[in-house]
Image (cartoon, one colour):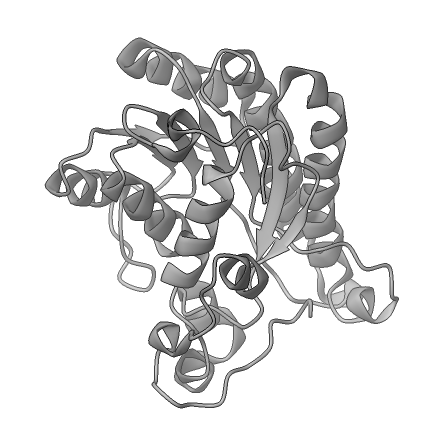
Length: 281
């Protein structure tokens, strides 16, 4: 199905993945999935002390990665600040010698209508989701050019300009669509360098701290899938040749179906429970 496929593309052994927001949730799940395949993992996130409501730190995830036999580098990094981004990338190069995969996963959420959106919440979402994604990508591009089967993968939704997606949480929608626009733009800009840029989004809600604390509590958690579905989907995307797999807005279910995986029951938090469709779908 995919051209230029070879064993060097299929293997993650010795390749380095830089993952933002990797201290918990989806970022952590992707980190562990790639670590199982032998990738070096950079756990780049803000959390160095555990918050009981959120769980996880850069250090706890790094230990989980090492327990799998892979190499990990925990770096405290607030991607709103360009100097911290550059310092994190420099540490990565010093430790592992390069970057082959960038996962732009770090994200802030506030599902508020315009009149209830405070400036600080707006700035947080756009500082992390948009500015952070852009400048982390910028800092990694020179190293991705030298990488093996280089991929950028943003955790953001397919762009749909139907006004209904903007009506209830305009600021958040703008920020997430901007992440997708960054991937779309980089796919075209970096095509000559054979650096892939794609997005990945879930068909259903995912059982994360955001769902538990901000969206729907325990009830919605029980109607969600685990982060491992996105981790597996990311794994299959990142295996694909970067020169021919770029500019896509991927959905987790579709990626897995293309790999012949159609029984997704194992990803449900509660087996057999009705699943809740993600808010952007």
